[in-house]
Image 1 (spheres, rainbow, N blue to C red):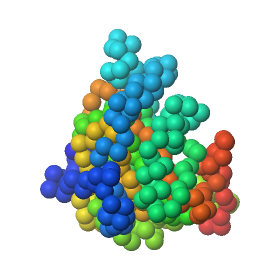
Image 2 (image 1 turned 60 degrees about the horizontal axis):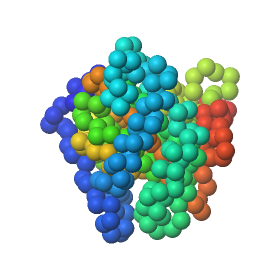
Image 3 (image 1 turned 180 degrees about the vertical axis):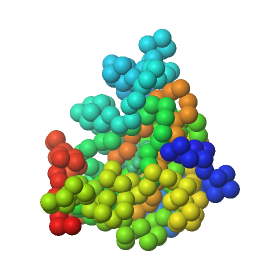
Length: 289
Ligand SMILES: O=C(O)CCC(=O)C(=O)O
């Protein structure tokens, strides 16, 4: 398996532990706390997931990222396609909203959290052309201005093989020293009077990634990179301190997935991601560094 152009040692790879969507909430809570993630097979209706993919692929085609000589449903990348992140195709789309926030997911999170949940209003849509995957990071650096008890739901919009490039989670990383030295740095903080950001000052990447080298990170923290042969309908949930990345897309297709966020409704939420038109990374904060 390859991530960010680096070959991951097969001996240092493993499989995500699977959970059943209707398993007892207490077991799911324990599993999430223990492993830093909960991989729920078949939580969503695969036919609905696949239909949503085709709906979104038509928009991707309108942006010239699909090969014109193949049917849209095949999702074959155009020559030179370079897309990776296209949230503008998902935000404001009622079909995406209803699928994520009016169907099975909110109820699942209510049960998992043991109290009413809320979701962020911003939806992250990945439209990943053949090429390198996402660099290793923990999500708190992007959404830590409310509570750290936020959960990401990563949703593949098709079966996602190793070749198409799914998510990888670094085993045990939610208990590593990086939860202190890295996770609380705000990616949107800027140093007043300097070009560098606090993230860079601390030795991490300006983008918020810990590093661009998943092999080096594994060697530093130990554990294995865990992944799965994802199927449409699966949902991978993880906490803000779980280091993750994605495998490179070595196919000729575009990989579509959504990531969205849930937390308890009674906890403060990060203002960058809520409201009718979430400000996202435009909300910078100046710090002395
Ligand atoms: O899908 C990807 O490549 C990255 C997703 C991710 O980083 C996330 O869900 O936080």
